[in-house]
Image (cartoon, rainbow, N blue to C red; front, side):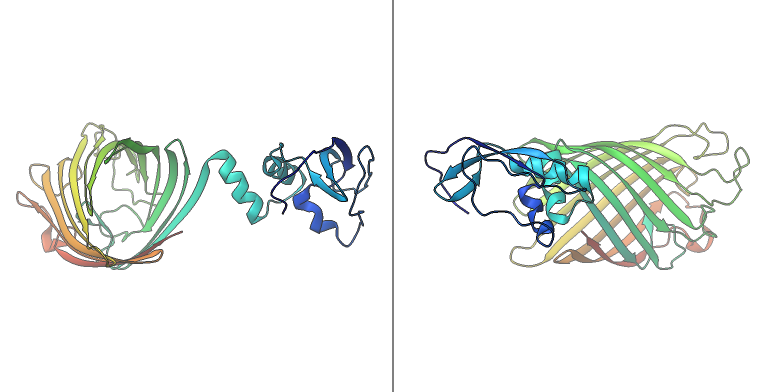
Length: 320
């Protein structure tokens, strides 16, 4: 690549291929390596858009005009003429500010706010997310359940969207909306049989100081059929998380405390605490986590501790 151009002369080439597409025609078309100012070349190809490319001429070398953003032109042509390859897709992502990610996890037990939803069995989980540089995001996440544990069926599918980003130095915010759905829930809900789906809004603030970070958040689900038979009971959840990474190691220590007031408890007064302590070990895109989890409340209504017994949970997860 030439790094400078002196005394460019204006010229016009009528050409049926962008610079980034030229290798694809190597077996079909031959192009002269030099073009004089004022000349034009006409190429015919049934699958290629014909465009005018301004060039500058320096000696015998023909150069594309550096004042034009050819990366944008290349991405536009790639979208118009066929599948976008990885390089074009990367360029497109830079132009639009949109990025995609995925996550997958295998856990010895699926705990939601301290409550066991997989019957003490292994759970496979995963999701996809799309985000924008503005902070907007949306995603889906799923996990298998134990259909005999709480009657939610054998699968949970969550759909969410919101905004997250920096509010000021050392302070981040996250606000959004999530729908918890259970496509094959059993029909013990007498108002709408099998309907345990519900939605809630959430918001949180994150703080960081060196290797230590913390989060405080709240989630609120208004009264709806998915929360109780009459559709009148709501649910409030507040929580705080604390983590500290150990310098020069892949280890992070974690602690969590949450409080539920509403229908999503197994207590006589509909109030419960959940807490956990654990450690994460991160290696590349993979993280191995171990946590001790428990739930506390006034006379928890859970004979045999099926939902709320304390547990040691190990999770292997990865993000891409």
